[in-house]
Image (tube, rainbow, N blue to C red; front, top):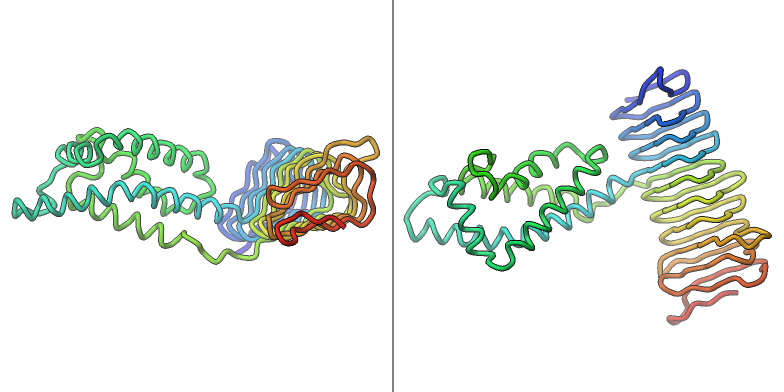
Length: 316
C-alpha cells in the first residue's frame, strides 16, 4: 500500500500520515510532519520539519534543522514492554492475594468490587505502594509523550492501568475478574513487544545540518556529510563526507571520511564496547568513544581505526 504525493508538503497540503509507504516528489517545509508505518521516499529537501518512517527513509535533498527517525518505534515499544513488566511484578502479588481471598470466601472474582481492589492493593504493597504509583505515572506519561509512534493495541491496556485503584466510580476495571483479564492483556502486550526481531531499518541522506537523525538499523550519508547533528544508529553509520561538530553514535560500526574541523570544533564519535570506529582524517577536537573509554585527537591524524582489544582501547 503506497501513497504518492506529487508536490511539496507545506501549510497548504497539511501534514501527511499513512499506514503504508509514502513517496513525495517535492520538499517537506517548515513545521510540517510526514509519517509512515512503512517506507518514506522524499525527492526534495526537508527543512525544519519532522519525518518518521517505520521501515526505511530515503531523502534525496538535504536535511536542515529537522528530525528524522526510522524504525525507532520498535525500540520504544520494547523499552515500554520492559517497564510494563516491572509494574506487573507489583500487581502479580496483588493477584496472588486476590486468588487466596476468593478461596477463603468461596467466592467468585467478579464479587470483589473496585473499592475492595483499591483497599487490597494498599494492604499488599504497604510501603511500596507509593513507589508503584510513581512508576505507574511515569510510565503512562512516557506512553502519552510518544503516543503517535505506538501501535494502537497499547491504548486499552494503558487506559486500564491509569484508572485501576483510583476513582472506583470511574474505573474501567470494576471487579476482580476484570482485573485478572487486564493482567492477561498486559502480559500479551509484553510478549508481543519484548525482544522482537526488528526489521532492517535504513536511513539514507546526502547531507544534514543542525538535525536529529535516529535509526533502528543503518544510516548512510552519501555526500557532504553532517554538521552539528545528533545521530543515533542502532547498527552501522557510514559518512562519505565530513562530520563537523555534534554527537555521532552507531552501535556496531562507524565509518567516516573526515571528522572535526581545522578550527578544532568538538566532534564526538561513539560506538558500543564491541564496536569499531574508522576515520579517514580525524582532525584536532575529535573525541572517539568505544563503550565508556575515550580517546582525544590532539593533532590531525590520518587513517584512524579504534576498537577494544583485551579490555583496552586501541587506536592505530
